[in-house]
Amino acid sequence: MNYDIGELYPKQIEFCKATNKYICYGGARGGGKSHVSRIKMTLLALYYPGIQILLLRRTLKELRENHILQLQKLLKDIAVYRDSSKEFIFPNGSRIVLGYCDAEKDVLQYQGQAYEVIVLEEATMFTEFQFQTLTESNRLSGNLKKEFKPRMYFTCNPGGVGHAWVKRLFIDRDYRETENPDDYKFIPSLVFENKYLMENDPGYIKTLENLPEDRKQAMLYGNWDIFDGQFFPEFNRSIHVIEPFVIPDEWNKYIALDYGLDMFAVVFVAMDTRGNAYVYNEIYKSDLIVSEAIQTLKSIMRGKQYKGIYAPPDLFNRNRDTGKSTSELFYNAGIDFIKASNNRIAGWLNVKEWIHPYKTRNEQTGEAIKTSRLKIFSNCTNLIRCLPQLQHDDKEPNDVANEPHEITHIPDALRYFCVSHAEATETPNVVSEKYFNFSIEKPIESDYGEQIEVI
Image (cartoon, rainbow, N blue to C red):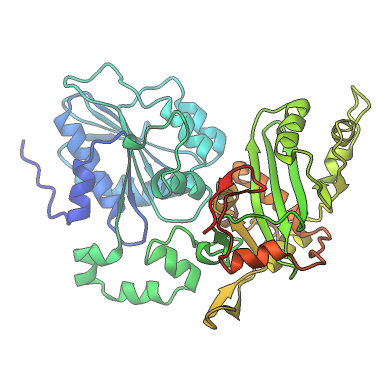
């Protein structure tokens, strides 16, 4: 049969031709994401007899408004729609099944099922747990008449509960050991590329331009570092992230940590003579029992002196079975904790104070620049990744949302430092002055355990 898909613009064509295992399309409003995903599913269903396709939105209302009605028009006289099972059945045996995952556990209903293609519409509305669970169902169903490699398609905008995992995989391209970079493809699309919308509804651009600045950056320009609901919109990599330098021995140093079996998150912070803080190292490891966490921390501390080691109050609670608290176990190993405040609202406000940008002048050039009291070394990749992705809690806007939980651990550690009392180094440091005047020429062992060539 002949099927007229109409005119697609270049980014949509690129999306239709992509064959990677994971293909993400979008990044801003008005890029034609939903339309091209329907076209792609239809083409796949027609070309591959027997293919099983699953299309998911977060809620049933979104599914109905964005896809069921449109697919009924698109597939009229091509496929039969069954409302009871919410599926389109093609004469060649192909199926497009429509579903939703309103609650996180709803995704479990798809375990044991097999779909060659899974499409997540507005993927940033899905948690990483939901995404990972669905990958288990992305496999051959045994119904195909042609060779095909299972794949998943994603459309999305910045923001939402899934912002962190989408950004990590498709924008930052920060992959774990089992993830193959070649499997992931991101196709950015902006409203300016949507020929139909630009010609027929040019006022939509004005609507997006009139949005608050953070939302405009995300929805109009597809900025993944700024999004609606972001708790720390003031975070700016050009201001807060710096290249490592040698931490002078004389500077006051602090440690702040958050411990649990799900994650042992630690930040190492140094204070200069002006009261500025530098997060110069981090620990970010899961599944460590207390003894393993202790050894991991001591391997970084290497006998150095720290003005304070801050830990949350729950680590001082006694275990019913052993009668000892986690803090006692650390103390017996030579690590003495200071109990940090667990007032979350006050803590996050303190973090905001520390990272708040302000204008100053470069002492050497006189140039006006923006800076902040707290900066992060570029080797602290987890803190840099997690901090800007925190969102406001829906019920308490002055608090950080606890989901996705994975990104909250190391910001919690930073919060314990920021809400605690930290002192600036009292005496001027010759080494630091030499460093900033670019006069050190020999390699010096840094406090985060590497050899750095300072020029």
